[in-house]
Structure formats: structure tokens, C-alpha cells
Length: 308
Image (cartoon, rainbow, N blue to C red; front, side, top):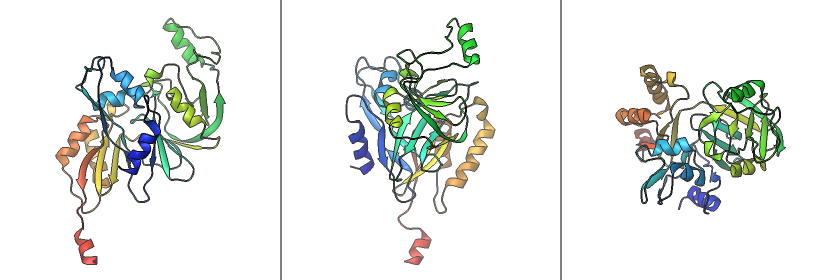
């Protein structure tokens, strides 16, 4: 069994999965985790399976496009997309890849990475991109909704008080990490089924058990890198993988986007490695978020043979 897989089972081999912890390779390998499968039971839904296995709903839905989300059916094989290519960002603190709707936390020491599904800002309330840090840790937070959100709720017939106190009805959950960006938080939620979707007003939501795990580890000053990387190139043990997520905005699609993808991928493929562009473009258009084997390095390249 791979060390990464062993650590995964140690972290989540119970009825409900917790966040997975994976060892980081000492070389350039940047793929962690393993694809897994389960057989659905009679009363399963994809919403339940996603939450129980610490996978975002949208990610699970994209990985199983032919499965009925509400009635998968007893015995239906469900692919769990629990293999990840790490985003291109410093392996320190918190890294958030918005298209993947995934948070990666690198504890001090640089030997492991933990990963959690997240909910992010919906269109019109986009989560910002850039570098910031944790400004404060708040246990049992109250919520003071901005005027714009109070107006939106009032127009929808769901008026909000000026302050929502801590408790089961608080949308921030039991734990919040305030970012140095004014008005933005990484927090829990009282609606866990929304994790893994674009549903927030720009904040980053985690499952209750996941925010508690993260909250207990981070301190003020921890770096936070938020990136927009729908295309990821990975390698592990001499194999190369391509992972593609849907873009954050529909306008990112189309022929121009395919050209940009081709240009990007040309810059990722190492010298001496050949890929099938037909397969690569299929991965691009499917955008199912599942790392796909795209090339395998020969045992030796010509240059290697000459040097031996």
C-alpha cells in the first residue's frame, strides 16, 4: 500500500470521512491521494456520499455524470475523486484553488498536506484571488451581515437581523478564520450540503468537522494563497497526469480558451515526453476534475543512456 494511501485510511477509516492527510514527496512529484470507488446503497444520494466522504458535491457530480444525483440505485458504482494535483503555489500555510473548490493546508515542517472541500462565492459575489493571511481566529462567531446582504435577503422575503448571534442558526458555524482582506472569512456552516458548491457571498465555507480541524492548527499570520487554476499538470512515480475543472466564468470557454489551454499544456510537458493531444483535449472538454494519466516517462531518455 502506498504511504499516501495508508495515511489516508488512518485519517478517515470510519463511518464518516475526515480530512485526508498525505505525505509530500521529496522530489517533484505533486500528485497525492488515490481514486476510490464505492457501491451505492438503496438510500444513498450523491449529496450524502459527498459529505460523508469529504468530497465537494459539484466535484462528485462531475466525476459521475451518468449517475442520478438523487437515486443512484443500490449497487451503482460511484467514483470518488479523492486524488489531487497540488496547485502551483508555495507549499506553506493555506492554498485555495477556486475552480477545484478545494483547500490545501501545509502544516509547518513541510512534510504533509491536508485537504478539504470548500464552498466559494457564487457569480456576482466572487471570492477574491491573491495572497493574504489569517488575521484572527474566532470561536463561536456572531455574524454582522453587510447591508447589501440584508437587502438581498429582504427582497427574497427572508429578512436578517443586524447581528446573527452565535448558535445553530448562525451561517458561520462554530469556527471562523478572519482573513486580512476586509469582510472575508474561512468558516464553518449550518448548511453543510452547500460545501463543494458556489453558494457563498465570497467567503470560504468548510464542513463543520473540517473547519474545527483546520481551526485548531492555524494561527494568526498563517499565509493564505487563493488561486484560479482550472488546469493542473502533475507527476508521480514517472507518470504524468492532467486534471481539468470547469472555469469559474462561462466566458472563459470557447475556441479561444482551447487555444489558451493548448499553449499552457505545451509549457507543462517536459522535454522528451510525448502526449496524445486528442486525449488531452478530451480531458479539457470533459472537465470532470479527475486526474487522468496522460504520459509515462521511458525508463531512460537518450541523454540518460549517453551519460551512463
